[in-house]
Image (cartoon, rainbow, N blue to C red; front, top):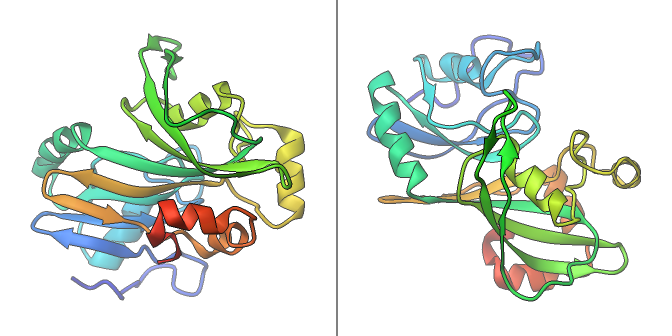
Length: 234
């Protein structure tokens, strides 16, 4: 597998897509923030085309991550493999890590169940488990883990917002004042990362990108967060 080959766009700011796990007929990549999975409304080069160039073959993402989200993305290397992997993923678990506004006051894990409208305006049942691995009064923020039990449009982003903890950098569901404050302090992206993917026969973690890790390490609760997620520093 030619992981280091990037024949198109070289020198033009085309991101390299790190492959963090692979096996027969599949790979898991650590998707950079800002890269769309498919060609859409954005003019940015999509991940499927970057990987096609990088690997010299077509690929089929098994699921999606929003363009501003980074982290674990499961990709099939054959069209026939997508359905089987999608079923296994639906029965597995994805862990998201989000830096959010506000001091977390709840005890233990929260199961948030609230229906969400899809892109066609149809309400769909949705459920997300959320807990906190670090929180502080100054700065007033919390580092949350979220495990979506369903896969709805912007589910994690909308559910933590409904818990009054919008994600830093979320221009669609977040808080403008909060986003501006953190942007002035160096976080210029959505602070949401798909940290871990676990399903039958596969468990993989995507390292936190440097542009988030460098800021999280300065937070007063970072030592506490590492006790709960020791692999956060790689």
